Length: 134
Image (cartoon, rainbow, N blue to C red; front, side, top):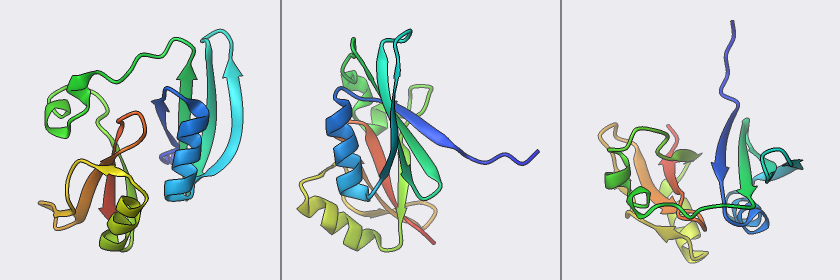
């Protein structure tokens, strides 16, 4: 078998606002919009490189709980923590996104692996790791 990573799914409060944000901040390309009436959701597929970000909006959405909004607290909870977006130059990407008003939860740091990274939040507070590619 030849397995490949295919997509990440997130739930958001406003499908149009979030899809616009991901396209504007990172250059995602919209592949399509869909609806699942049986689940009471609409969703979009956005593509960046070979990865698809599947964003759902439920008509009965609930905001992200406070304990999930900070990395240190969230790492203690079992489940998916964040997703990473890679860049060749983390410093320039960090400054570019800060200039666009993106909320960062960390400064640009060097991790235990020697990789430069910073954490930021999308419009719903979902954590994203900006990681420098090697």
